[in-house]
Amino acid sequence: MNEVKHGPRFWIGNGLLALALASLLFMGPLSENLGVWAMVLWMVLAGVGMYFLMTDKGGEPGMPD
Image (cartoon, one colour):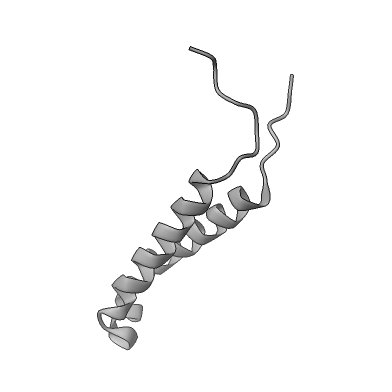
């Protein structure tokens, strides 16, 4: 079997999405301290994480049409 190799953008994107998940889990305390900025922080982390995942060029290409 061929192993799929992922580039650094994939891992950076996954790390940022993990931080976005952690910020959602602690949204209550974060919103008490940061207010509306807690939601802005979550949106930025999720958006940038998805950007890095989608721009990753590692791995094998999909099945041909």
